[in-house]
Structures are given as C-alpha cells and as structure tokens.
Length: 205
Image 1 (tube, rainbow, N blue to C red):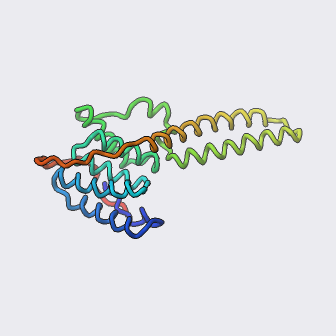
Image 2 (cartoon, one colour; image 1 turned 90 degrees about the vertical axis):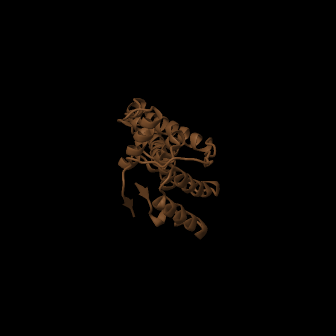
Image 3 (cartoon, rainbow, N blue to C red; image 1 turned 90 degrees about the horizontal axis):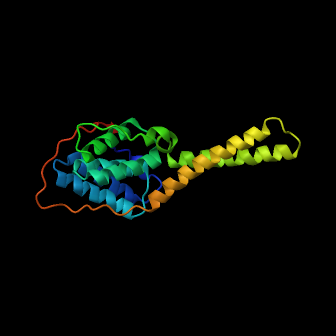
C-alpha cells in the first residue's frame, strides 16, 4: 500500500509537494528493484530537506522493501510507526520486512512489542501528550492535597507520576532514536533483478 495523500506536506514548501508527487509517481510506475531504489532516492531528498512524517517513512520503507533492502525497510517502517502509531497496513509490511530479514516465509512481531504495547501502538506525539497530561494531573493532585483535599489525591498523584514516567521515558527513547538515525544507502547496483511482492495493495487518499 502506498500512502499517496497530497496533504502530507500541506504545511511545507511547494517544492516538497512536487518532490513527494514525483516519488509517488516513480513508485506507481516502478517495475524493478532499481526502479524502487530510485523512488527511495527521491523520498530521501525530502528526508535530507528536513521532512519528517509517517507517510514519508512508510512510503520510503515500502520502496526499500520492494528494492530488496530489508534492513533499511525495517528501519523506515519503525520510523513511520513513531509518527503514525499502530496501523494494519504498516504492521503488515513490517512483518514482511521481518520475515525477509529472517529468511522465513512469515514472521511474528517480537515479544517485546506485546509487553510494551503502548510504545509501539501509540505514536510518539500521542505518548508525549499522555506524559504531559499525567504530569499536569500529578501537580493538580499535589495542589489539592495542599488545600486539604486528601481523599484519593495520594493515589491519584502516585498513579499519574507512574504514567508520566512510563510514557515520558517511551517518548524520549523514540525521539532519541529518531535523532540518531543515519542516511540510507541507496546505491543502485548495475545489475539488479526485478522483484515481486506480497505487500498490501491499494491507495489511501
């Protein structure tokens, strides 16, 4: 599935929208791994220009996966997840990347994604928002206790502090990982074979 919505860069310069449409057109017309790598190179131009959003990394991951760059595709899908949170199409392609990396017919998501579900199912902005809300709720409980309202405020303060710690740590880890990534290797080999894929097909507008 290719996210082709034109609103991905609605707040950015017209040049970015032009490059975005160019990359999507390259993806739609691609037939070989080299074609998909060239589309990935165009998406990389947007990343190099400072663009950061889930649609961009999702499409980048799809292009890399179809180009046979499984490790890079997995990284791009994980970056998309930080901005989009859990999505069925994203999870589907993420599993394909994991299976190809493990050289198996199918792959299940790692166990830690189930244990720490909030870290992977919620986008980083959502987790940051929950952490901020919990922080405010903690101080509200403290203020209420200062005014003599002690019933349940202690439990509320403790619970909100715990939620803040969990979600703030999760969001901070995601932002740190996002700021630590390196540029993808998008060199096109001279003789690269065509590819077939079981990626989910369709368009989202």
